Image (cartoon, rainbow, N blue to C red; front, top):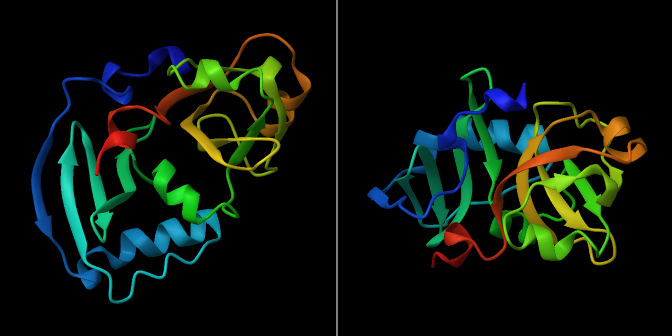
Length: 178
């Protein structure tokens, strides 16, 4: 299933910001509401300066000039909305997380996929094909985003193989933006 991922699902150096424009909250309210429900969080963007832009094949939402939300296509070509790592810094209580040990961190910081050997815990609702955020097990800080290759119980129980196909990580172009 993950082998069928299209190349545009990865971060790429040649991506550029296009069509950045202010947007009214009411125009993106359904998108934000869906994100809040999926991750069980409250974005609280009332009164914030909101913008949208295209970044490669993704659509991004900026809140007070910080990229906090991305919209992309999932494996079934359906729209998927998720926080960026900067968004997860503000919402560490959000669902869809996977925890890794310190041995996995250097690899994740270089954009490597997350192997199941480094996974120590996963939020129960994580299923194969879900977009998930990876955090370190000690400080609970976000490290990367990616597509889960296995369900939560398999991510924790298995000891060999790929667990998450990395999409966005601390130190990449999107992280360095703004």
